[in-house]
Every structure is written in C-alpha cells, then in structure tokens.
Amino acid sequence: MGMNLLRRANLQPDHLAILAGAFHPPTRAHLGIARAALAVADEVLLVLPRRFPHKQYESAGFEQRLQLLLDVTADEPRFSVAASDGGLFIEIARECRDAYGPRPELWFVCGSDAAERIATWDYGRPDAFARMLDEFGLLVADRCVPYEPPSSMRSRIRCLRVPEDYSEVSATEVRERIAQGRPWERLVPPAIVESIRAIYAGSAS
Image: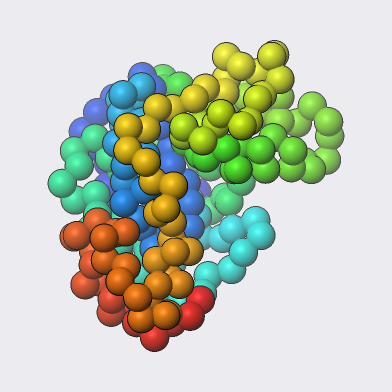
C-alpha cells in the first residue's frame, strides 16, 4: 500500500519536514515542534505508521489516532497528514520519495533521545545509518544539546530551535494523568480535548 496521504498541503516543497510518531495521543508538543519546523521547511508531514518497530497499538487504535491528527491539523495549511506502511525512518523516507518525487530534501524531526536511538540502532551493517543520511537528514528539537553526532554527519543532523519549552508535555504524561484522574487538558491542543476524553477515558495505558 505504501504511503497514503490523507491531507496534502497545496505546495511543491523544496524542503519537507517529517514528524513520524505514535501520536498516543497528539499533544501540544507535537504541534509546537511541527510549527517550529516550518522555519526551515516549506511543509511538515505528520506520519502515523500502520505498524511500529518495537510497540503495538493499544488503547487508541490506528484509525482513532489518524482522525486526531486530521482534526488537530485542520487549520494548518502547510501541514500534511499521512499513513505509512513502514515504521523505520528509512522506510518512511522511501515512501515519501514515492509520494513527493525527487524534488524535496527530506528532514525527519525528532528529539535527542530518538536521534540517539536511530543512530545506534542495529541495522545489520556498521555503515547503515551513515548511508541513510544520504537519503534524509535529522532536525533534532532543542534537546539535541546532549546529542553530539559524529563530525562527518553534522551537515545532516541539525538542531531545531523550538521557542516554547515542552519538556513537561508528553503523550505518556497525558495518558497517566487521565488514568489518575488529574487535569490533563492543557497538555493537548483544544481542538481534540473532547475526542481524547472520549477515546482515553478510563484507560491506564
């Protein structure tokens, strides 16, 4: 099936930022980081994989999370939303290349923890990650300070300045607060508060 673009910005981007994740659920941090990426990219593509390398769907299903993404980006003309078959960045990058053609540079947006994990993942050969950077770059959101890429990769791994501090905002925190009956609404975009309440109410996962 490859990549299914459910909403496509009316652009022909030269630089495409890709924010791929579980979005369990989408948070203000997801949206804020995506908006920050517009400073260096023409379009931001939010990608929900149909499967993940090391986790399963639980609590909120694939279709529910996809609808939350569509709802939260409805007023963002430079945001696109897609579902992908691949879960690894290299798989998503190749699906993006099929969908967008050869023109745009591809830049994945991630945090420093994800950058470290991606760079050290066992892909079966020692030069695998360096070869991937021929196909895409990484924009590491603010927390990239602790992560120092090898000098040979610094042109392909860049820090993304995020104006607002989202260190206390995470999907895990949202789920835990809902499960504990604590206030959580300020952690997510207002447009999806009621949908999240309906989907996650009573869930501890």
